[in-house]
Image (tube, rainbow, N blue to C red; front, side, top):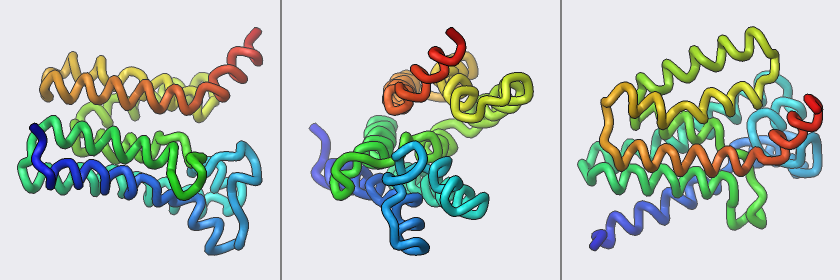
Length: 193
């Protein structure tokens, strides 16, 4: 049985995820809904299209901070691996499907990176190296980022630094983020074929 305070933190984690950096930056600076432009999502890449590099960076770091925050609290309070993983899943789900934005948010890469930084920083380092190598050869930012992120549960398993619950949770979050990018993946395959 999960204690009430842990359940409340998981719910709070979802709502922290709902506070979408790109959406609120564009709303504040341009008085517009970012989801009406570009790719139609409220992530850092689309924010960069509207607000430039500074908008991209600001949105990216706001979203990373959400992932860091929701993991930091249960880690500091020593609530255990299960609560950390459930909070990580909740913040990513909140970012992708925010209730106050009619369940149309970002796609979760930056939030996922924030979660991963506290789950296993070595995994983040390795997948960033993989991303840089892939991007150097293929110059496809989002798709190469997804390919690198998809490796994260396998990297965790090989490094053997975290428990099996964290690896399973990371695999679930990876699946959620890839699902959120299904349109990008489809477009990439259409371009190849």
